[in-house]
Length: 262
Image (cartoon, rainbow, N blue to C red; front, top):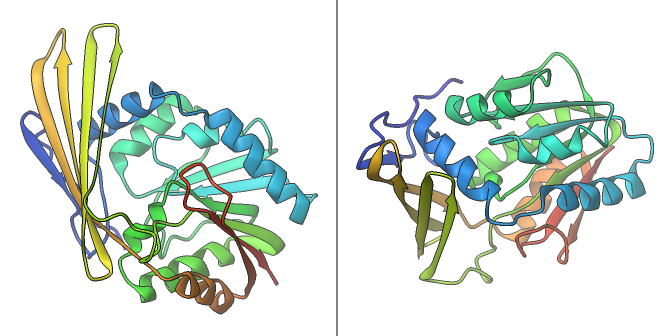
């Protein structure tokens, strides 16, 4: 179901999760800053796409199409479209979709909630990367999302999910910071993550110095759920998939769940 977007006032503003619990939506300006920052941190999307394609081909060599759920600014799809004959993306945030569409002309990109979107076709592969799955909020939301992914994957196809931390691996009070600079703009990112029960609270502050727009900042504040490993695996099985957990997979140190649809 469609959900409301985030606050539109970016100057000295705040972006919050709106609508149902756990749903995170970016506005246009935040999406632009978010995408520009991560493009310049040295993250190797091409290498990540190659590794992803390798583990998929080991399980489904004939894979020819891929759907990236919660595709964000489209950077993974930018590399994955060179490895598969057909790719598409689903993203809840209209702001992020705007960034992705500028980078991926001709690639079908759909606005939708990962728990209940409906497209007109099935794919060889569905991916959900960057710990975006943590936004679903509840075990019921996790199960709905995996069932939705499975409905869009052909029999024998592969579903890859990069989880958020497990309760036992989460680092309480984690803080981080980095600065990137490009022509005419410098962006500093500061973050702090806390925990209450099985929910983490991630607060991210972007401070921007821009040649044309001056000095301004955005604070992003949202929850991510700490699901147990067996809750992920149970959601895969309830969606009709065999599942394995690769603790050395993924780019974020959180492993990967790889499901094969029966």
